[in-house]
Amino acid sequence: MEYLTTKGNAWEAFYDFSTDLPGAHIDQATLTKAQVKKIKLEEYRQKRDFSKTTEPAGITLSAAASKEKSSPKFTIQLHDASRLHFDLRLEHEGVLQSWAVPKGLPTTVDEKRLAIRTEDHPLQYLTFEGTIPEKQYGAGEMWIFDTGTYQATKHTEKSIHFQLKGSQINGDFHIFQTKDDQWLIERISPNKVELPASFDPMLADLSDGKIPQSSDYFFEIKWDGIRINLVKNHDAITITSRGGRDISNQFPEVIAAAKEIKAEQVSLDGELVVLDDQGKPVFAKIISRLHKKKVSGTSKSNQCTAYFFDLLYLDGLIAKDMPVERRRAWVKAVLPVGEILRFSEAFEDGNTLWEAVKAHGLEGVICKRKASKYVANRSKVG
Ligand code: MN
Image (tube, rainbow, N blue to C red):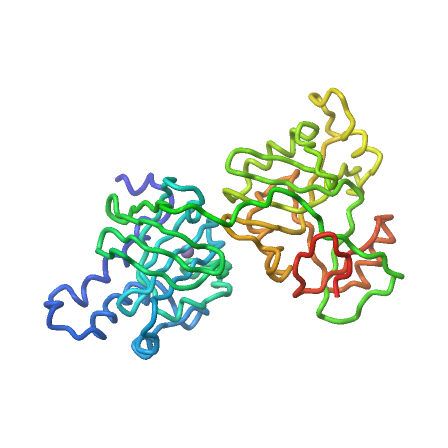
């Protein structure tokens, strides 16, 4: 009777076990390499409906496999499924051996992180990005986080020693099975891509009020408050002002809320405001919060809201050369749901937003070119 009291679908894992059947009664040694690969991908195919998902069916895998005789490839994807996680995939014998790594690859030597072995994926998955539709297996957004080649010095069924050569994620790792689908991944050599130590915010230009009419741009509300850099470094959270001053102690409610951010290490760009009951920032209130001597017991009407609109670093990756749209998608993905930390929404229609901003007495509109990089101190966006 136990399944009656268990949350979720008792038959959820049913198909997980159906995949052994094609090969179960066959001596694997008599199979051709192509047939073995086909069996390996059976579980991948069983889990997906290729008339609905945009993921590759992976039928042409042997053709893809024979093209590359150089170093095997790897990919790390950021996957905003029911829970935000990373997926590590290593090309091996014609398929991608895959693990879901909830917190991403370790960034410090000797640190071990959980990795859950998942079904082998077809090689075409190396370049897969997109949205897996609702109700489909792994529903949610998937982005390539980093990709490149790797070299394994040891590669067995239960343990792999490998060196990653990605655009930013580099170094020696060891991944090994502990029990069933549970593995651990450990970093062996130091990480060179670190959380940025200083904050040089990208600034906006003043414009004559002409709204660009091109679909190359999007628009955000300009929040009238204090520009901040919020950094979460594991359990340590700091808020720094534009001038580089640590103002963390002034905003305990923001620090508390930031503990729920879904990233181990992240550097966020945003604006601290105090909103009135119409949702309009009151600049005098945020300034008085900044200088308040006795921070505890702040009244509800003086509670801070932090709007975030950009991201400079996320779990081993410096993000400033990526298109702003991607950086913003990651901001949205890592922010917890709540009142205090909010995503500063983007709008496609600049004219309508400008009218709304004027009608509500807000400060202004920020216009950004969709493909633009994060450039410190620079103002012109394109
Ligand atoms: Mn995944």
